[in-house]
Length: 93
Image 1 (cartoon, rainbow, N blue to C red):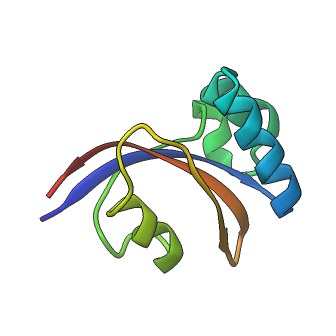
Image 2 (cartoon, rainbow, N blue to C red):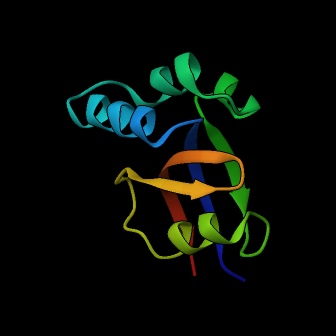
C-alpha cells in the first residue's frame, strides 16, 4: 500500500498562499512559515502531517501528494478548508 509523508500550510486566501510560497522559494524555512501562518493545528509541528495513505486526505490533497515530486513546494491547492502549500517529504509506492 502506498504511503507518504508531507507537510503543509493552510491559509484562507490564494493571494496569501502565493505570497508564502514566494517566501519559501526565496529561502525562508517552510516549518517557520507554517508555524507563523498556517491555520491548521499541524502548524505547531511546522506543518508536518506525518504518514498517511491514499484516501486519508481530501481528494485534491491526495492527487498532489501521490504524484508530485519530493521536496518541491506545490500549490496553491484549493480544498474545502482553504488554500494549501504542500511539500511531499517521502513516498513509498
